[in-house]
Image: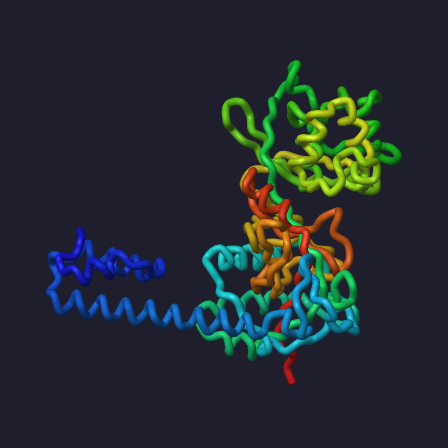
Length: 423
């Protein structure tokens, strides 16, 4: 129902926060039973809430800008996201006071992810104590950090800044520059039984294997060494799809009846990982300055079938899967949260950690134009993630997530959040 008063109708067509829009919808649904003064009073109250929210966001955005990582180095951001001239950090983790930062807002998706983080810390089998570059971290500290964040959603930024400290990761270059890449959960077509088209097996892990596990070439080449061992989970129509699902570490297989099954990571053959994109570049297989994304490499191999097997087999590493119901899980065995979960090297970032991140933002040409603060959760690991200078940001499921993930190859900054030490 529309408001009879034209001024109210104009207000009704304005843009408000979801909470205020819901407030107005309740007014509309009860309009006929309310007196005019009551309606006007409620509208004024809603506008007051809207203005307070806008002011709060404006202050926060200003605070984030004034305390951005670029300001720390008194320099500009390079096109790859690095901070030129950033000071060298003395330790793997360097203490920073959190009150020098602007803190990002928390949405419902992050709150749900933090609940998963608590479950990870309660159930995932790992050490209860870490010593990372001389900084002692305990599981109870990680749990307290999560709880403080969950409580903070109902309070003020200063409360959190007075309770937590930030510890900056040294980064790839020892100056705080951390390499951000993205990963996602692919969806590939498959069948339960092989036919002329769907003839490429997706394997589960061999049990009780004697000696070193076979290389990719031994598995996918002429030897077909895993055939007839009852290890086939399903059959895909393109080995390149299987390869990239292995690189991502998990995925969904979709059957002709539209049903899907989630395949979780079940280990590798322990052979070294070698990048096929570097192999393609080194051998000048694609035009110079080609954008080597997952999509362009797949298209190149599909168009050059005579090269496909030899290129894929340049990487001897091979990933095995197991069927698992539900949604994508990380190594911490909890559901991953799009845009908030990250894969880390757990020698430097314990699973269950919450981090403050300066995430690179980039333009349509792939040039970094600044950084955005966001809370992130360490919930996964990756075979290609090594050291304190690289993390993988989870971008979701399917094609759109693939496109988003492929754009990430820039630098940002990271701070592990821990409770202030009692004095």
